Length: 192
Image (tube, rainbow, N blue to C red):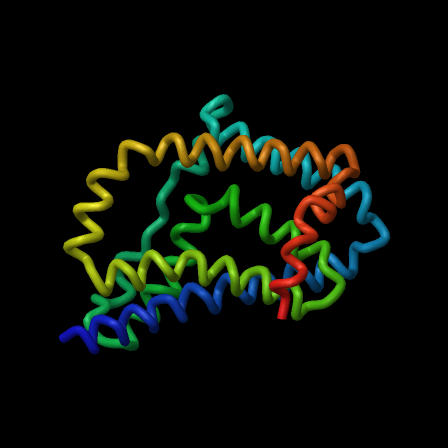
C-alpha cells in the first residue's frame, strides 16, 4: 500500500514539475530575446512583484488570484498514470493560487543568461512544492495533526511572503536587485 502511495505521489509531482520546469525554459528563452529591454522589463516586473506582495499582505485584493480552477474529469488518480495527469492538471489549476511566488520565479528565470539556469530555478521551485506532498504521503495522519496546529499561522506566513515580495520588487524597480548578491554571496560555497 505504501509503495503504491509513494509511486502515485512521485508521478503527481512529476506531472506538475514538467509544467513548471517548462515554464522556466520558456521564460528564459523569452527573457533572452527581450534582453535589450532588460532594464525597463525589470522595473515593470518589480512593479508587478510589488502588486503581488501587496496582495499577499492583504493590502490589495486581486480577486482573480483567489480563483481555484479545477479539472474534475482528468481521472480519479487511482492509477500511477492518473496521478501523473492530476499532477499535470494541478499545475495549471493552481497557477492562480501560487501566482505571486511563481511570477517572481518566472521573472528571475527570464533574467537568466541560459535556459539551463531558468530550468534549474523552476526545478527548485517544483522541489519546494514536492516536499510537502512527499511528506504528506509518508505521514498523512501526522501531517493532518500538524496542519491543524499550524493553520492558524498561515496568514502570518502569507503576509511575510508578501513583505518579501515588496522588498524584492522595490529592488528591481530601483535597479538595485544585485544588492542581494552581496548579502547572499555566502551561498556560493554550497553551489555545485
